[in-house]
Length: 128
Image (cartoon, rainbow, N blue to C red):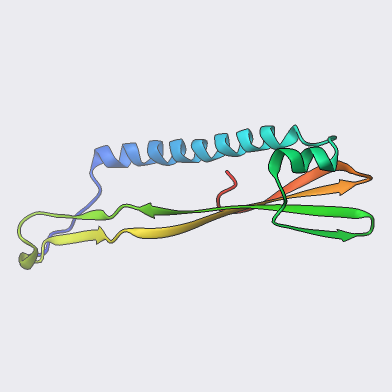
């Protein structure tokens, strides 16, 4: 006998809460990153390199230099257990996912004109 597993009323109430908390965490990380990066605007290129190190790559065009800094990491998302009622061979089991490897990267590119940091851009899935 296959049972129809529905999300319980408690989970229906808690799911939006968990989603909003995780999104709020991402927004807070982005705001914190931007606040930290804003301190470099108006500083000289040597100051930027002194603080952040040698950039991953640079490019110059039209009198503007672009300095790119890459951050990357690998995270392992834990597996999700199987759920259900009764033994697996009875057909009442479901769900379950193996662990997943996620590659996270954030590229911060600063624009420098007249030797001064003017702005920055963020690109990637781990910038906040």
